[in-house]
Image 1 (cartoon, one colour):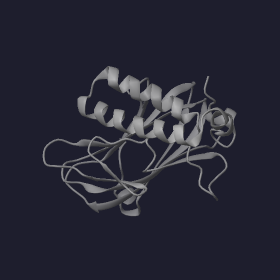
Image 2 (cartoon, rainbow, N blue to C red):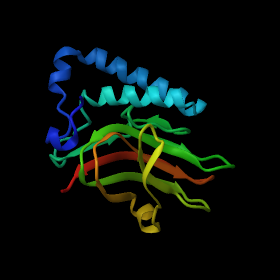
Image 3 (tube, helix red, strand yellow):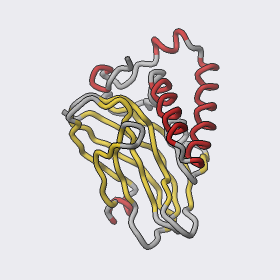
Length: 201
């Protein structure tokens, strides 16, 4: 069973997994997951999404991106992390850049499908807004391969101006595949820089 955030202390300890799986194979797995996730996003097939969730959960055991100087209780995923996916975004450096075309709102971010235990968590999305548009950007939390919603709300104007979207949420049970999603209206453009998940209580 994968460790939960509270059990892992600093998040997800990569040492045991990396002892058995060398870095080249881990990188190959990450690249493969990236390709599969993009195909799943385009097909919107439930079986494909299940495959991505299971593969991401395995990859999570190899460890989150833990930059120097970050909170010891936080896991930080850069936009370049393959556990963060986008229906329309493009990875450039450590960010996911997106420009929502005319028509319907689009999911610009989903992932990382990690296990968490009961407790209160602070979830923060760092974004850069290049162009706003009529309509609302929606942030939500879900699990069970995206089929069970835990939380949802429109992003605040102050959050979009500051580039930091924050959620404080109490998990009342073990979650095997926590998913954070961000949906933007047509015409909206910008980038996702990082996602952090930190247990606060």
